Structures are given as C-alpha cells and as structure tokens.
Length: 259
Image 1 (cartoon, rainbow, N blue to C red):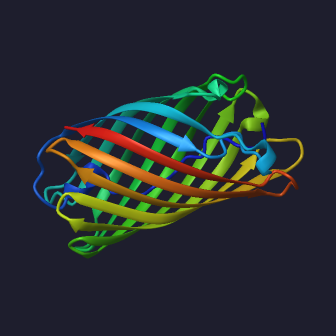
Image 2 (image 1 turned 45 degrees about the horizontal axis):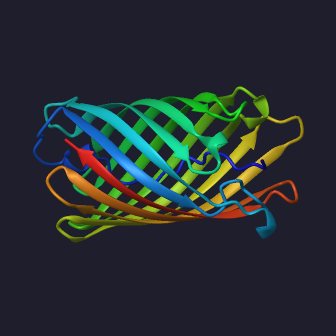
C-alpha cells in the first residue's frame, strides 16, 4: 500500500450552531447522526491505472455538540463536541475503521459580517490493517465573512499531529483551505472549495506529501431535522519520492439527522 491514508477533509461548512449564533439561541445541545454511502476511485492509492483499485464503503456517525455564551452580549461562545464514526469497505476490508473524536473551542462574532472560531481536538483511530491505528491532536482556525444574507466566504487553517502504531504512518500535517457557501433557496445549501494538505511522515528517509483537494457539496433540508447531502471530491496527491503520486475521486451521498 503506498502513501494512501485517511486524509482529513477539512471542509469548512458552518457548524449548525455557528449559523445561528448571531440570532436567537434555541438550544444548548445539538445531537447529530448520519449514514453515508461513498464510492472512491483509487482506494489503494495506486500511482498508475494498472493498479487502480476502486471501492465503496458505508459510514455511520454520531455526535453531540454543546454550546454556551461566554458574555452578556452573546457574541462569544464556548463549543464542545464529542463524536464517533465507523466505516466498512466492500472489498478493501483491511481499511475498515472506527474513530472517536472530541473537540472544544471558542466562537466569536467579530463584527456584523466577520466571525471566527478556534478549536482543538483529540482523536483515536482504529483500523483493521495492522500498524494504521493512530491517536493524535489537532487545532483548527476558521474565519468567515458573511458577504450577503445568503453568500459567505470562509478560510481554514489546520494543524494535526498523528502518531500511529507503525511509526512510518505517523505524521505532522497542515491544511490551508478556502470555500464559498451559498443558499440558493431557503432549504438548500451549496458549498465549493479547495484544500491544500501537507504531511511530513515519521520515516527514516524524508517523506513529504501534498494533496490538492477540490470539493463541491450540496445539502437539502428534507424536514425540520433531516438533511440529504451529496459531495464530490477530486484529490491530486504528490510527494518528494518518485512513483508515489496518485489521483483520486470520491463521491458520497448521506442522510443526516440533527436535533
């Protein structure tokens, strides 16, 4: 298996709570659950078409998010979240995995149009393939500019440190991203963006990878608490070692519940 790993897609969609913090506060806790079916064109990270291996997998996820104001003006909020997800592959069963994640951070409405959020997380990943189990920490900064009532621009900077059971799979990595969100209709959300992901692996010989990820996602609110989501992602992966570059396409369809 080349350097194909679990790339954390930092898609900077506004958090459910973040979208409503500038208005009335309806709840202190949000519970989320979802079921997704995903097709990936190059699961094994093959550098040439001859070794290309596609697969589909199913993911279940659940999380709970707590938030509370930190000032009387309700412009600053503490946000905490715990969650877990599990993915099962149809063919590449060695990539079956389960992950638990916990995060905490602060959201602030900076001006009438600018807002920001800084958060830290910890995660514990278990993978069927030996050596890929990992645990680590990360930090994310998000800055959002509400251009109009239904259009906004968001930037993301993320750092992650992952320590795997097999040290050569461990890495330190950064993600820099930009995305634009648009509400064409009241219950429809569209988001498009780009992420530049860099990773430095813990290997005896320097091994550094770069992923250019482009994504487009659309979400339709079906009822008060149910959402349908579709996402397409194109990844161009390169490294400092010849013969390890590869391209990948990911298409996912999900049904989500939020209360």
